[in-house]
Image (cartoon, rainbow, N blue to C red):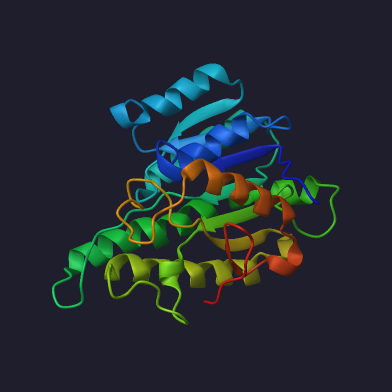
Length: 258
């Protein structure tokens, strides 16, 4: 079985939930990345304290200020990471930052649709654009054949709630802004996979499961633990190859329909 072994990883939205746990588990791996860039909007806020504690324990774990909805902030973050890597590329970009605003069809407000779309779709697009030169560099300098998350990859954290083929949970949560944004993110992932295929950059959309986070609590099916699902997420990322690029998969590597 393949093992996830990137030299460098960047995770957006790393101050809580799935993003924080991905950073935590990457940092304690025996074959941990040399560089783990953990981004969040405000590293000095109380909500970033757990992340700051991790950086004190692990060398090579760097907090990078970045608001994915702000183009200037994304550009500044890319410049900081580029300087830190000192000529090396970025192997793995995990677009995890996202928001959810409740909304039903009869009353959902246009500004809520726009706000969620800006963070959940435009954000990953801008981040991927700014970090693309580093991803290309990592791919070009790798001795690995084909595609992998250890070579060069963009992982967009999506949701099964964005699938159009099978509308999950509509009877108890419509969440129209969130569903629409994740459906759009899935299409963005597919477009990325087609455009970046020649650069050997693997691109997937990944459903992390319903887990016990600020966004995942209260789900009637009983959400799973964050640490358990992140263990499986990292295992799945280690097994992905060129045949998976452009697909939508779950945390346990099961294929999902768009």
